[in-house]
Image (cartoon, rainbow, N blue to C red; front, side, top):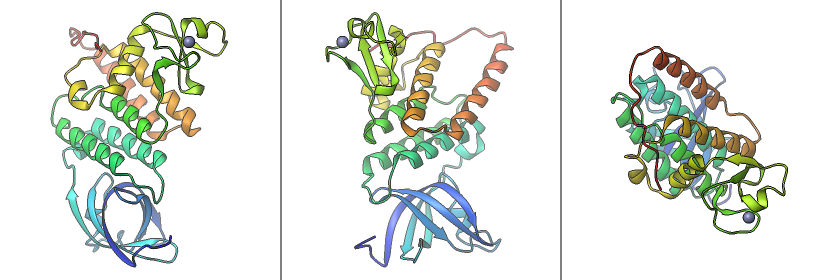
Length: 277
Ligand SMILES: [Zn+2]
């Protein structure tokens, strides 16, 4: 990389770690100014390492980076935010893993990533706060996914018809995921690859895509609608990345376990209000 200082400082979020050689690790980190970086952390698997605790997954750290031959090398490191509540909650860990995997997939080396950085920290802070509450905010990951897709240049189009450009009306609409959007009733019937998209799912997708978290948080989305929204987003992300995300599978398995546990409890369903936009 041209014009990089021999030693530089940055804030970083640890997205991924791989063991290397006897005691080293290769880190994938997100930085605000340089996007995604691969960094060598020497000796961090030794029990005597002072750095190891600052380089855990999901940690927001302040790093000094020295230029290296194959990889740049982590020098001094300090924890800025450890998100310690998050680490004690399996569901929050799964959510943070999903977040990191998506960030890893949708960011690139050397690209300014300030907006994505702010989004990532906002969601991690929310997860950390929520980790001590009874439940995580249900729509947070769907909201994050839509935001990230927009910032990374893959914003799906839920407001205007892909065919004629007219605003989509509530009623019959067709989802065409391969093109990242929706067709109106008239354009959709002329095509064989559109799938019917119900009004509630479209409404929630639009709501999540166009509102800040502060407006989304207080709204209860009916669980079956939220599940359909998540399925649409999951399939779209897979299409965009052309690969299955491992952590999505993990989240889905976790949701299955949770749903089974909920089914066995004789409780009333709460939060049955539909999201309105
Ligand atoms: Zn149309």
